[in-house]
Image 1 (tube, one colour):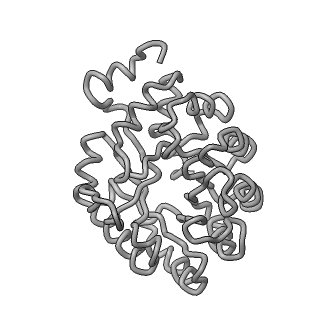
Image 2 (cartoon, helix red, strand yellow):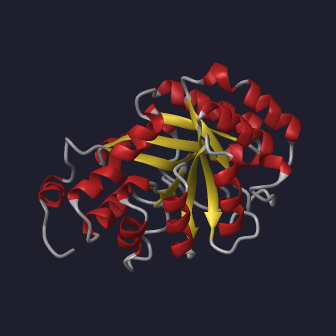
Length: 267
């Protein structure tokens, strides 16, 4: 960071900026095998969010990644308990098409809790452009929904080639590239620049601390970047600090922290 901007100074001195809320577009909830997560329940997550001035967390329950029928119900319950702070992604498992069809059919009745759809192609061993996700993508395309998909550079299930295939085919779906095709930074920026419906997401990106965020702002524009953390896996304060420390403008930071997410949800 070449100079201490007005926004950065406010954060450093007060720990937050009241006129710059944080919208986290990539979170989870609930316990996970093999790791201790002390802040994984809805109430404790909301408490930690308040400390970091995170006004909204868009999340999927860990259980939903393995059993959507049970996990999506838990997500809905949490989002309805904290309607101002939590919005849920409806997880789609492409390996169980009948269950996926059932979840999509119930989506409209859960509009108060849901914000969009969540895919994890590598976890489900199914290509993003394959038949398992096709109906869900058509559903998102028709309804203009955000779709947060795990993406990773070079991955045969959700790498740059797979993302390109669906970005142009389903222009109505707002495609959020979870982890921004980690490692394939140029390809990620190129896709976000080329396709109006494709967005970069910062979870695991700022871990690099090697100018990647600056590259994204330069090559794709800060209007195409969403703040995300994988919370409760990672800490909000670290990611906030990484955005503040990047060599970008306060206008860019505000786009990343809240403007883009609000626009995505309102469009």
